Length: 362
Image 1: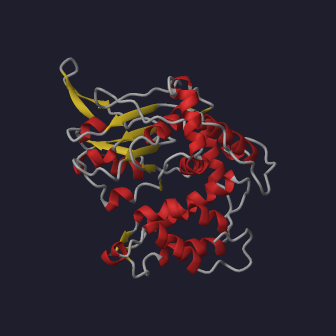
Image 2: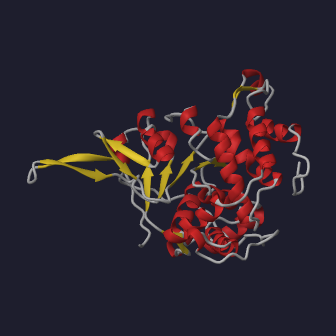
Image 3: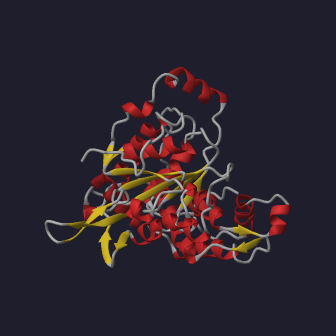
């Protein structure tokens, strides 16, 4: 099935300018030699090769941001949703579109505006005079990858239309429930600087996002490459899929089978529990955050070529998975402490389980 981009509102705008080159690092660790297709899973060799192709494809659009692309892939393989939060013009929408177009599956785009209604997202039942009954017309959320541009520009009522979709992969309209096809991923963007005319995402909405990333400004070399190669040409126009929906399903099955020892599972629980005990945090991470942290760590381990999770995998994904869920106290804000600072401090404070493999990057 050919990828398609559709807009929920007229006048779709071009995404931010960005550019790229292939960044994906070579996997280290023990790569499995299991046969492809056993129990519907792919081998770790196939997973790494597919992820490398997707990352290289995205880097044609977004230059010099391999870690951002890696977190996007981790989120995809962890069956989660990604929140891209940064200032205008750094490539938020371009990242979302490039990832979506790199996979040959159904894709839709929603431009969130203040007048957008929940039915514009989920769909609506329309009366058919010929049949004498109501017919459901699916909204743009019925796609494998949904790109939500400037999600904080829509009203809370419209934002809440995504809650059931993101958590339960289903939509309820007029007492009828419609299931969404797997894989299903929401990639939302928002601008945290200019807040005029926006509606901040509530805690319940932010908690649905597996990870949050900030792209940041490119370095001078990457920006020069962008000017040289793409100033007069949009790289998204030539982007072709390098994987498909069935392949992604098999990769997800592989990630689900990655082993996590009881000691590492306990360590994940300890990290999340610590966010509820720090004086600087008014609201700590939820049990949902623990599940998302474990899933993201499994995906990170698989991308590194391992069949098992080590503490370093938790360290790598802890900030993107946990920081956006925390609500800091007024005193922490006054001291100019960020949620990222607090999560990093927790990683230093919570002891790593003895006997666990992997290097402790603190």
